[in-house]
Amino acid sequence: MTPRLFVDRPLRVGEPLPLEEAERHRLLRTLRLRRGDKVILFNGAAGEWRGVIVDTGPPVMVEPVEFLSGGRDSPLHVTLILGLTKHGAIELAVQKAVETGADRLIPLLSRYGVSRPDARQSENKSRRLQRIVVEAAQQCGRTRVPEILDPAGWEELEALLSPAPRLLFWEDAGDAGARLKSLPHPGEAVTLLVGPEGGLSSEEVAWARERLGFVTVSLGPRILRAETAAMVAVTACQLLWGDMG
Ligand code: SAM
Image (cartoon, rainbow, N blue to C red):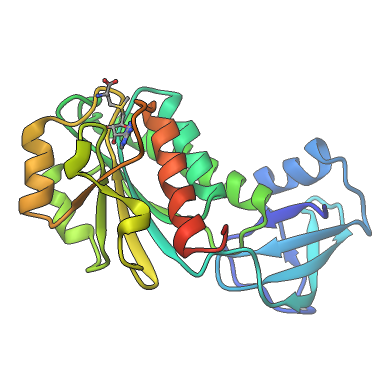
């Protein structure tokens, strides 16, 4: 597959643009590309550009030569709220959420999850998660780069959500919990919530249901790890209502 490079800048056919150091390093050092080699450029808007390395600089110059419409983004807009969980698990969950087509990611601060990070930790974590999002979008061929918000508490959540149907994945949903295939088609958007590895408290589940209108959904009888549940939840919705079925 032609290497793909996300450049957070306007792209126009025939207008070469200089690459930043991290972009240069990836093309010349990691991928060992040379002058004349081809790349696919995308900037998060719809579509992507076939490009060519016209100068290895510094700075490296790449020229968009042809706009390619289309892309690999799902018609189903998925917002995934993820109980902020320990280092490693959230990174994996974010990476898999991008690959399975989530559009918007909201790390949730919850009672049994990790505590609110201080400003410096939060800044570092947000930067790391943003890098994971871009790398996963580059790798899986998406042209839209999912948005990842700063960690939010329950009280902040309501203002961040669209009116799209809201599904809370709960291992204790039991028979009262809906099964995905029994739910009506959500239309073009759906909001999913998965708790942290310590789970959600019954008060949090009640708040989500009564104040935020979430429907509790079971993913079957087995207890899934948080990162597994997140990937399974997005995949199941893409299978039923997106572009994986
Ligand atoms: N109560 C769990 C336990 O005993 O380990 C802790 C939570 S589980 C590891 C992490 C999250 O994955 C849960 O908060 C829930 O959102 C989701 N989850 C796991 N298994 C599930 C299932 N069978 N149905 C729906 N959601 C599930």
